[in-house]
Image (cartoon, rainbow, N blue to C red; front, side, top):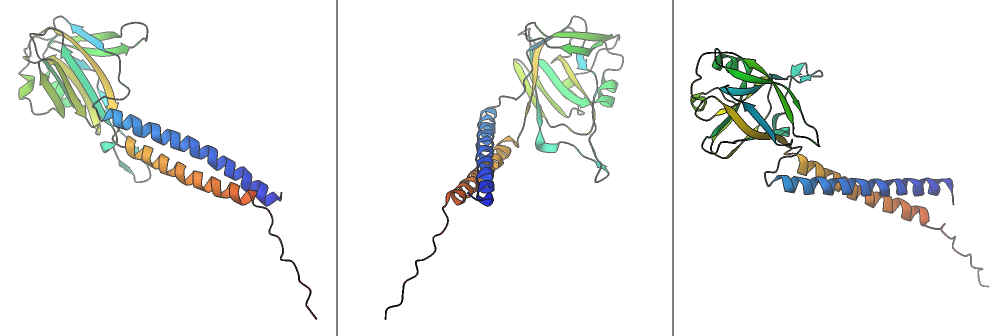
Length: 239
């Protein structure tokens, strides 16, 4: 076998192996995407209990979303590439729950002078219940009804389990959890996850690439396996 055919055979095998990996990965992502269409979030955290006996609200520390596109010299965000899913339920069935995400400045103004608890550390051990540590902010004012506020970027409220879907955007954001009626004493359970709308198309792209790689690998192996062409036999002229 010539060196050229050996090279074709080697590359053909590499293409076949790569095709199997691409098709398996693509099929897996497409299957996962179909499952997530049933509103099951990806990367879901463990159920966490948030308790603060006298606080009017439990909030997260501000989280800063600030992506920067160096090539264009401008800021950019994830847009529709990822959605954050937040769920919460009041452990007291007689009370509804309120969950909302808003900019830090708006939350600071809303909770100014109000007694609330801020989550400063959240640890999740696979063998134990998640542990939450708070920083307690004193106050004497009663907050206004969170349902009537217009600054929420995403919010949900009501009895039972409530869910919000939020597309991250530039800025400093805070998650706020309260009783629906703005009463003191927070005792809720919740979880956080993410959804990836582009997951199906990524899987489809990998699957198509795998099929093309498979076809290319088969062609290269077939060319490498072909024997040399035989020269046509010469016939003696008749006299």
